[in-house]
Image 1 (cartoon, one colour):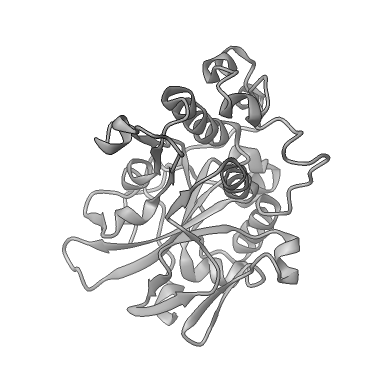
Image 2: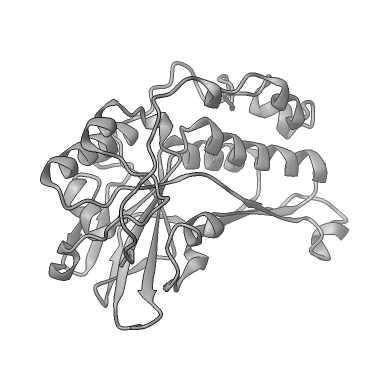
Length: 303
């Protein structure tokens, strides 16, 4: 943990946010974000913290969960500073769904909070230098939410009652974030998938693997690493705002499932709505959000 005190310097072309800009930045401006896990632990102790050999994440039954937090996608173990830690609460990166209610609950859950993934990065010159990063996916950003929702909608419309498997992958966005000479050694951790097992008599396409789909989610990655105490405090408030509880004015089955869709989740699941119709709707991403400047700092290795 002590070695994580030296925060990396942003490389050129990465989005750079000053303290003043971050204060005025809407959370909807943040699509994807990356910062050292050690820094996230210091900034968000109510959402995630170390306790012995366990990485404790605020679960649904804990008071901290009512104040927000993250949906952690993991296989149960995280390597930080060379040591393995067990997670107390997380969503498996692969799940099986067998009925409509499970599907609706899963869909609501993964979109209710920002997603959190863990990756390890090392330099190719010195593989002993390894750092653990937290990768955040802002599920409230229209561009990100639209890619996830439309991926789920389109696969339902194409299989029509048959079994299928859908995977979401963020590897390309993250690998393009780091400068040359650095390598993500567990890129598979940047994906999650679910498999819907329909009660169909003949699932030929599923049996032969023809109903497997992959959605590569794209977006701008914000570098939230900082050594400045003032900026760290601003980033802390920014993360709290991003992960605050989502206020629902109606039950999930009654509300619209997309900021750009015309119908409900029930319509898409029953193939009564084409997901492509949402493309003709005005997008929230086109609203005039405050601008974010590009970094003009001198070249430095991220690690």
